[in-house]
Amino acid sequence: MVIFGLVGVVIGSFLNVCIDRLPVGKSLLHPASHCPTCQRRLAPKDLIPVFSYLWLRGRCRYCRAPIPRRVLWVELGTGLMFAFLWWRYGLTPELGIMSFYFCLLIIIMVIDLEHGLILNKVVYPATATALIIAAFTSDPGIFKALIGGGLGLVVMLLLALTFRGGIGWGDVKMAGLVGVIVGFPRILVALLLAIVGGGLVAGILLALKVKGRKEAIAFGPFLSVATMVTVLWGYGLITWYLSFF
Image 1 (cartoon, rainbow, N blue to C red):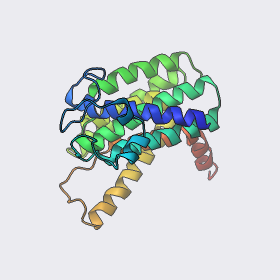
Image 2: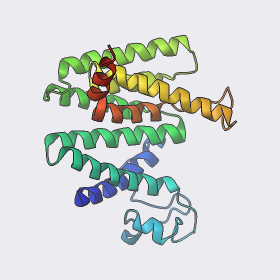
Image 3: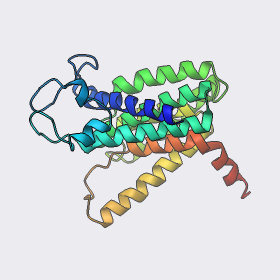
Image 4: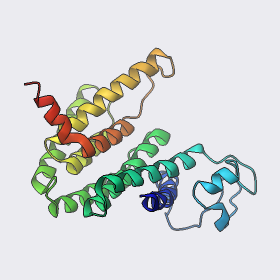
């Protein structure tokens, strides 16, 4: 579990590259890692996940420009997530599938937080990949994945048309991806958790005057977290709910 957690920290470093470059249309491979302020190419000792950030106290070695704290949190978070997934699934095909999905959701979540964007270049290939995975697995399976994807797309589309400006088209497309990942009926759990969670947080931010009524609040992070929860405990939540009837 510790070793896989360390692998997650390293992968988290690559996720940071995706988060930095995908929104601005840059290649993930070229140029080599460099400081965005002074453009100086980073040495290998500057690229050790977590350690380099702490050793340099969150600043570029060469120009002393601050490095976003997000870099550290994504690396640590991905490492902890990988350790948890190993503990839950062990060395199984599900471990690889869930690791891929969770990394994907982290990328979508952070890009939406920082840029207010859910990128087609991420959602479309991810949806196609999720359909291929569903075709070769029993949970959710291709039919439940297709139903879940269609239902997620339709529900969010109706919300977007009803509350114009409150739901973006990127959120609609992402709901389709979420439906393919979790399948039917768990898509209902994911959407409910995202909507309730988003509403609660929005209410708190408005009450504390952190956000104004006309300021947008990214919905992608709520969909991402809700998907993670649903993947892990969705069937249990459905069983718990139905037990009341």
